[in-house]
Length: 265
Image (cartoon, rainbow, N blue to C red; front, side, top):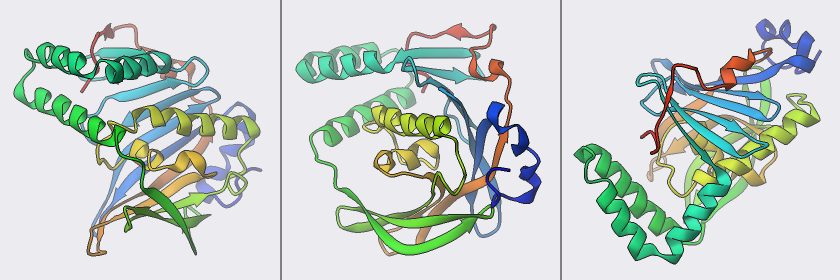
């Protein structure tokens, strides 16, 4: 039996763990309610992030090839890019910043004002972050918590000298992950850093894992964000963890989806 500290309702799912996928559902927690926000599915080198709450597209990642695919269930469109291509775009942008900004500004003129504002905001934030050294650091609080029966260790995230968030990490050993699952999870954390420059302040898995966790061993089970005055701003935590076989089709582009040549915003 693996993961003996995960809630008893899930224990029956672990017997076939050699063929199972790791699935985590993250919930937004408020004083009066718990709202499912997104799920993360990991199957060896394949990853899928489904957005339950909000308008972001679903994301599929192939950790072996570096392919990243955005899926929009409403419009039935998808956008595909590769991390190597992203690096090439970044290099080209930095070497020809003025020209690239002009081309992007021309290219987004046909979009509605809200979309243009989103892209411009991302560009401004990227310019700011690319020239500013990272000021995020982690402090071991010596405290722990329990999420779904699993013990996690609390680290404080310090940004520019301010206590921004607390993240509770469950060790790989605590969850009894296999070496293959640990390898996939570490690759996922590293790959997500490709989007760190343009990620906005959202309550989702990407925000949690883009906070510098690529250098820390563990699975984030809970994150608490604070206002400057120290009061809690929001909280997100794992609402369920399961190890079950997910059909391969879940990691494939549906046949009725059409490709879009620009990112799905």
